[in-house]
Image (tube, rainbow, N blue to C red; front, side):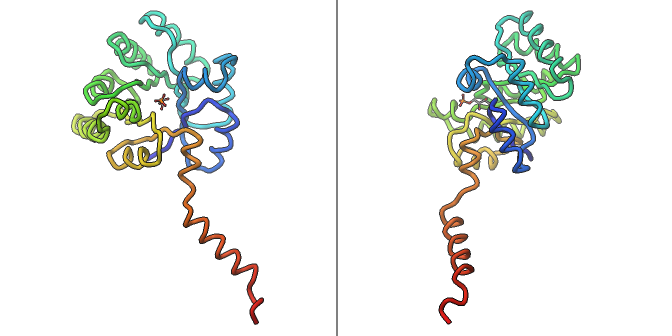
Length: 219
Ligand code: E4P
C-alpha cells in the first residue's frame, strides 16, 4: 500500500514527504499550468525529483504516436529509474505504452474512467493504471465498481499493474477508493492535510494539555 502526492510544487512535496507517508508523485499538464504557468517543465520536474523519492509521473503533452514517443524518451533522460511516463488513454497511447514497455520504461496510463480501459492498459504493459474518481462521479456514476472490478481482473489475470486512483475531492473519496481496492490513492496537498485532522482528536489533545498545565492547581 502506498500514497502518492498529486502536485508539482517542490516546496509542498518536500514538506509533505517529511511525514514519511508518501512514496511517489503524480503530475499532469493542468496541475503544472495552474501551479507554475511560466515554469520550464524540465526544471520543475528536476526540482520535484530532488525533494522526493519513488516514481514521478510526468504526462505527455503531444498528441501523435511519433511525438509522444519522442517526448517520452526525452523525459526518461531526466531520471532513468524514477521518471514514469504518463500516457493519456487512447488507441495510439496503447501503442506508445507497448513500445515504452519493451524499452523497460515505466508508464502510468491516465484519464481512465472504466475497467475495460484499465484492463487494456495493463495488458499493454502499464506499470500503473490511473482511474479518475471525481470525474467518474461528475458523470453521475459510482466509481467503486470501476475500482473493484479492475482490481479483480488484474489479480485474476496475474497482471502486475498497480491501480492509482486520482481526481479525488474529499476524504470520503479517498476512503472509498482504498476500500474498493485501489493500490495507491494520489492525493492533493490540501486533501492530504485534511486527512490528519479530526475535531475530537484536537479537543482531546487540548484537554490533556490543559490538565497537564493545570495539574496541582486545585490542591
Ligand atoms: C491523477 O493522476 C491526476 O493528476 C489527477 O488526480 C486528476 O484530477 P482532476 O480531476 O482533479 O483534474
